Amino acid sequence: MTYQHILDACGLTAAETTGGTLSVTTPVDGSEIARVPMHSVADAEAAIAKGVEAFEAWRKVPAPRRGELVRLLGEELRREKENLGRLVSLECGKIYQEGLGEVQEMIDICDFAVGLSRQLYGLTIASERPGHSMRETWHPLGVCGIITAFNFPAAPWCWNAALALVCGDPVIAKPSEKTPLTQLAIQKICDRAMAAFGGDAPEGLIQTLIGERDLGEVLTASRDVALISATGSVPMGKAVAADMSKRLGKTILELGGNNAMIVAPSADLEMAVRAIVFSAVGTAGQRCTSLRRLIVHEDIYDQLIPRLTKVYEGLSIGSPLEAGTLVGPLIDAGAMTAMEKALEQACAEGGTVHGGGRALTDQYPDAAYVAPAIVEMPAQSAIVHTETFAPILYAMKYTDLDAAIAMQNAVPQGLSSCIFSTDLRETEHFLSAQGSDCGIANVNIGPSGAEIGGAFGGEKETGGGRESGSDAWRAYMRRQTSTVNYSRELPLAQGISFEI
Ligand code: NAD
Image 1 (spheres, rainbow, N blue to C red):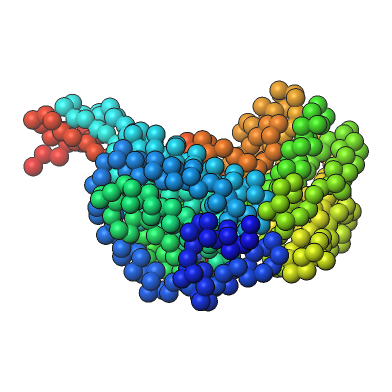
Image 2 (spheres, protein in one colour):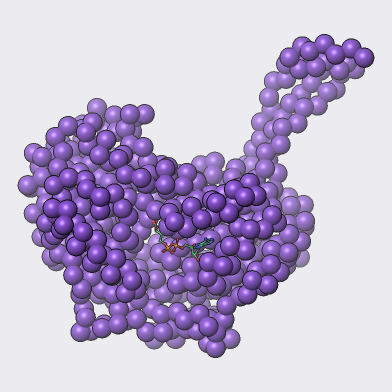
């Protein structure tokens, strides 16, 4: 299948993919696959105005009926799973299986949101005053801006959009400038779902803005955008948070991770090896939840590290579109340079590197294929504290579990973490208040590959936001507390006497 066939299969037209100023290259071989027209700042402002109008209408539609739109979206996504999965793979370089996984996550969150549309529960609360009732209700919030990163061009939009839509909020997407085509294809799928839904889906309910950070900044600056959900790097999150704080706007921030695994002496090493390799080299180490730090008990370190280096030597690196490939390319040359610099710094800090280096340079001279690296570090030095968006796994030894947990928690990020151990005391300690400080803490599972049913997100510099399952929906609504007096008296709260 040619690249053009992949774009055509997603219904992308020549008007959308040619003649524009945004050059889109595929990481598969570094070639240009589209020149996409970009939206202007004025277009972004018009989109917000349309979103505000759509909100007026959409908030009146009953939530279960809003769920019907998301059900139809899920149906369309089921039909388009292979086409969209292949486009994800072509545009951001993750292997086709992971591209399909992203679309499956979209389908799963649609299913979740449909059920949720009948469960946007509030509370009734006991009033301290006689003849009074008190309740808490959740109402639609307003226009939601969804800013997303290159490495997950599909699923995070849907984690946000599916919930926002059932909660009564219009959505405006601002995908990464490196991966706009996937969002254009998703917009088409949404347009079809809206057409099937019929009259009460207002124009402007689901919109897409193609462009660079300046368009994101239009969204963060506008008081008409009630919520910004931003997925990306820590510097981006800090900039968004600063802009939003000027107007005290609501945010959901999903930022970088520096995720660790502790491997205890009782661990099942067969399982640990599989989990380590999938989570460290999957998506070529370009997941926010990628495994970056391996903290191994000294008694098993010399068994585990040689096994891992052997598996790394046999990994199939190649085109993400070909069956059998496990490691695709990095997004671009800049990412490869960042990896090279990190490995140099790690060596300067006393590290021993296994693997690393460019790969497939003859076959794909303009692409950024790399061999994943394991770096044995004498200590958790400066480079290990940073997130390098590439397949580098730093391995370190520990003696005492509390020291290992302290080491795990010592980095600025707090997204995902895990322990491999069959000792219940250790695993429960790891999950306790004195254990992992991350938003995600797993036992005998790697740090990546979360299910949509749980709330997804992390602490500290990861931003503190939560998306997807559990009660994450509340961030897309506003809470109202109402007290009703059905008595013939007017007693004041706290028994205050105020006679006039
Ligand atoms: P990035 O920060 O460079 O860009 C992300 C998005 O933010 C893009 O759409 C970009 O145009 C926009 N943007 C940048 N500056 C902005 C600003 N000041 N105002 C508004 N919008 C702005 O990130 P990236 O390189 O595309 O993605 C990689 C990063 O994303 C990694 O750090 C990774 O860990 C993180 N990430 C986090 C999660 C999560 O759920 N925690 C998921 C995926 C990726």
